[in-house]
Image 1 (tube, rainbow, N blue to C red):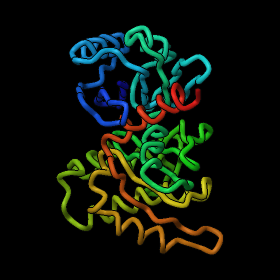
Image 2 (image 1 turned 45 degrees about the vertical axis):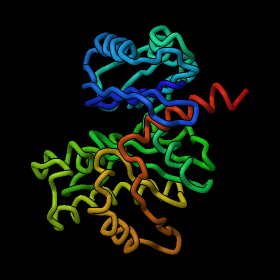
Image 3 (image 1 turned 60 degrees about the horizontal axis):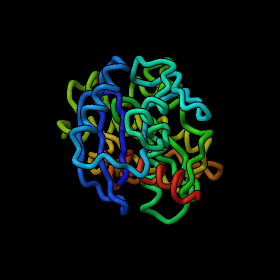
Image 4 (image 1 turned 120 degrees about the vertical axis):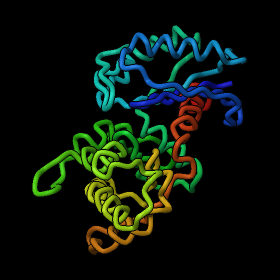
Length: 271
């Protein structure tokens, strides 16, 4: 059995997956702003599972500065935690080896496993915006830790972080509704444009063959996907071809499956 933990800015999902990567049990709870309370919640939820003997654990965190040698997370995009030894803490709680990575990287890895090996740009639009580059089903660890918070774009006449006007949180602040409650075409056209602005910048840097949109807003890709593809296609140039944008196959559980894929890669397949 494997344990996957998807730590989000607002909620955390913990799930047990069998050796074939099938989720057998899962628990969801609000992510505490206090790190010590988070560890207690993890411990309580793991204790509630019928299985507690894990071959390995994978954890996805919304980290923007991460020391991969020590497993210490320096800063987070949507959490106030700082300089937390999260890998060691989770190994102590689970009594298992822990593979830990940026959540968008794990989600991208998961989605890449459902496609032919290629150059895949994964973008999660949720509370915040994260992204990753997966090349032939391998994470490019040099790309994406900063997420959409540090990508500055012109919006309403001034430079603003992409995340501040295109994330799920920004959608609620701008339109007064969550993505699931938006039905009018004009609003989705505006949302597609805002998401597309950041994608143009990322395409220029990463040169992907496909873009995959996940996260809570990715769940509703069918409402704006055609508009987003049209927006990007209209800005295409001979020097900057635009790849096809697709919705994630498992937009809200991609990180959990990526936890499994990464833990297996680190602790099983590499042996």
